[in-house]
Amino acid sequence: MTVQNKSLKRVLAFGTFDVLHKGHKDFLTQARQYGDLLFVVIARDRTVKIHKKVKLHHNENYRLKSVVESGIADFVLLGNKKRKMDVIRRVKPDIICLGYDQKHFIFELEQYIDRKNLKILVKRLNSHKPHIYKSTIIRKKLNESDE
Image 1 (cartoon, rainbow, N blue to C red):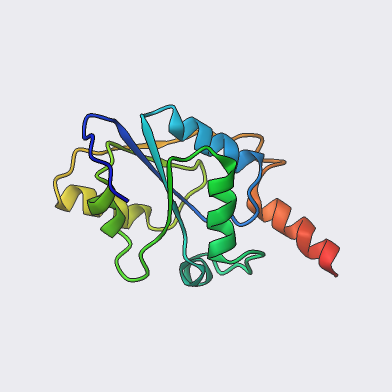
Image 2: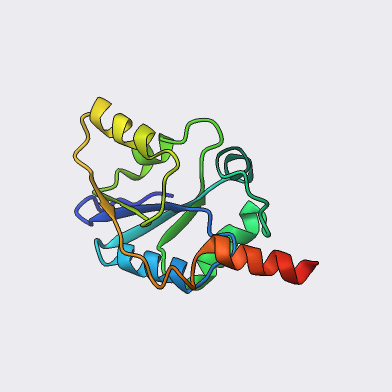
């Protein structure tokens, strides 16, 4: 991943995207509007298991492929297994977009930005019909249909 033109505004978004749905696509589309290049980091399976404590329907490679195939992001990559903030150093985003309900690692992210004295805007985006398009709701329906 090498992007030479530093004048392009870079947007970074994080997510699990287990079952890529309209809410995710809306989130990525909103994020895209904040810059010229959209980088999306897919949470590692191990990270999701530790922090979210949910059973994933799809592994990290499938989830990465789904986001790539959506065509919304310019770059899609898996998170760093050991140093989660390394992607910030590599991408050098101008803006980091967070989902309306993202909770994991936010405090760590804000501390990292402050400690490194980075000029990065962190923007929390709006939800899209969360009563319908929310991963926990969709996952529950999938689990019920598996039984």
